[in-house]
Length: 494
Image 1 (cartoon, rainbow, N blue to C red):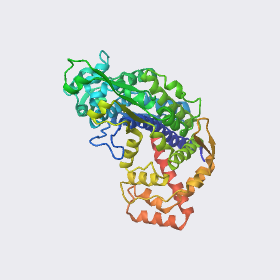
Image 2: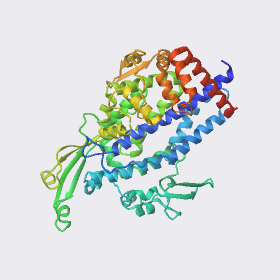
Image 3: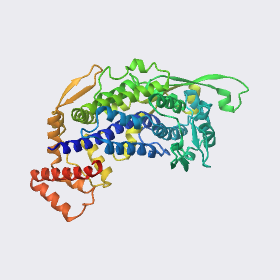
Image 4: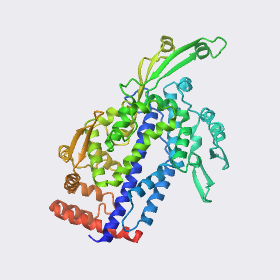
């Protein structure tokens, strides 16, 4: 292989790694936050009247900018691991991430508490689900936001205008960024937090999630909250007679903290071992929300660095561990540790209808919602592959051939980590050979072709037929497609 082609392959590899790593980080955020926020009183079904109106345009812009810089600035030796890490951090340490999580969290929190009929208890468990309530937590801050009238104001002023209708923030407005460019975004993505590096990012995350403290502390740290109310005020809407009652205790009944059961399992799947992430006992003692966020995100960023240093071994091991987490049910089991339970006073139970036990299971909610998207993570890895193909192809008839899971796991060596989790270390060459053999299949090629402009053409039929006749023919086609890709990429990076 020529040196020039080697450098172009580095381009492909590095772009792939950056996008993968950003996806891993964002998925870890989604697992913790959207999973934590997507609550339901009846865990057997999707929450009613809850819509996920996630504004990802800010993140999409950041990722596009990073990928462009990679394709424009790579030298003959490609991008260094340090460069990949820097590129990923540019996306993560940004106003866009803070705004995206905020746009996901607060509307869901409001709808969830309304559905659970627990809005009256919200502030008792450190949840501030309306604009004005959250504004009261960051009063005096310097953050700004464009309002509906197109003028930039204090974020707290805009939040007070939001009231209890978070759709207010979905309004599209045009505004001038610091670099002088005119942007048209939702109000969410006009918020300026002043993120410029790691420290300012976590400072902003600390303030942004102040209205969500109860969620993080109960679900991730397994702390508890006692709901103390004035019974007379609650029943008769008057505080003339102060009769206080500990109406409920909200807690997580899992044997271990949500961090240890769910997040550590995620870290292990990404190839991290004990000592490469904060210990559960340390995380459960944190009082700063920024420290909790660091414990969630920094290990994933470290996994990015490890993967960038040795992408072939890192990604093959990651694939096998993820497949094992699905096949064994370990992923869903760990997610179900993110939950809230309640113990209620007899009077609270009688008047409000609450019962002792699990109020809602956050993991089940997330599993159900992912399933509604067509991705089944509660069954087999082959079912998940089918769901992904149907989602990408937008076809209900897309079907992937079954992968021999025993053969895949045989490409790796299993060890038991000190925390009891199983970890697979892949033999990268065996794994790659296995995947190539799996890919030499006319059904897969037909499915892939159907995602392109060749769908339903005579050329497509010829290609699929040649695959059926000879696996060597497929390998020739694959090599040709790689050359075409390299040629197109060459015109960009030359």
